[in-house]
Length: 322
Image (cartoon, rainbow, N blue to C red; front, side, top):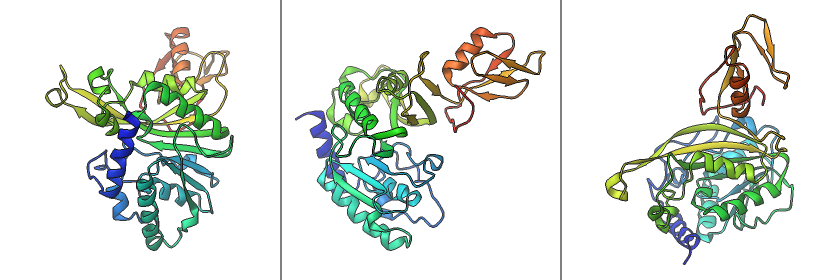
């Protein structure tokens, strides 16, 4: 049995018997006007963060959701994309597909605006999506890709890239590790299925996104997720896992590298009214300008006495330039 088989068995059990505390369900799901989330969906909120970012869902996009879970985020996506077939949910576990279908029927009874045909649930997996090339505006996954080993993660990201339209968005929420996870924990298939031992570091995680071809990555949130204590996990010292929400865009990678936004700003404080770095960035004196990490580094090296670079907030919501 491979780690993927173990994960499938684990989530088949979780579909039949909701496991409160399996992931970070102590954090309540996002609430929106006229959206009622059935209690069963809240109990099956098997995710570490959220992929629901309203600014990415304007214009009723077509959304592909990988790993339907209890149907919570499929319902939330449908809230923004109210048309037949707007949300396509793919899951390899029959028990989870069945549970999500039942939960969505409950949601239809509690939400007059929601129609069951807004969400289409398909059998499939992240490595071979049953979707044509360049056919969806958004691909999303919550707390699934982190269980993959490196080669499988690359294949899943390549599939997401394939089915996205140009300028489409990959919205993800996964645990990351504040330092490399020891091999003995990575090899524990059940811990990996529980989203506790497969997490990569932030640098490794973002490098895989860029390797897949995504030219712009935006970090929407980074927050504590779980602590692996030294006693229970045979560690020399506790290891903190964090929840990372990102939006990656299917745009070309610039010659000088991808743009990764983590909430940094550049502030010019020289004698002139503005600073032109001759690379497409104009900084007006005293006004913070959101910049990607690559540009922040270049400005700090080029104008060390005239530009202040603020720390990453890890909560970037658009604006600025790279």
